[in-house]
Image (tube, rainbow, N blue to C red; front, top):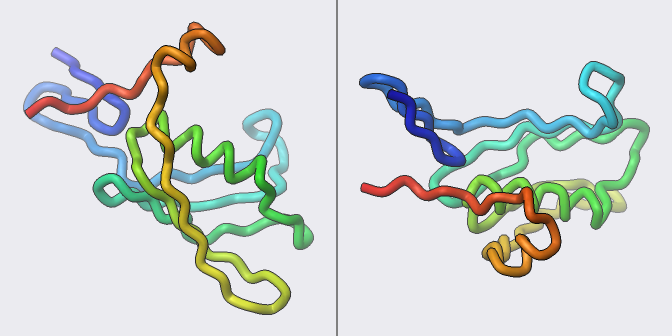
Length: 119
């Protein structure tokens, strides 16, 4: 029997847990990408580690919104990342808004709310 949720997959006597994700900024998988990030998940928090952009491209508000959407799907509550801006080291953190199931279904009926593991 296979049971699934956003971060855990149970197959037989094993539970496979997603702890690390590699994110690529690209239109189509396999094409050259303009940014890459390694994301480490610990509990309900994600740390974006090793965020690199091509040719000093900025990490935009739209990029942050994409990471926020990913966190919502994974059931993650907060996310932090590190960047150098104007030669200074800056840590940024944001809280991920809870999915409003009613609003999300009206906007996009194919979006499913994340499933939580029930103990």
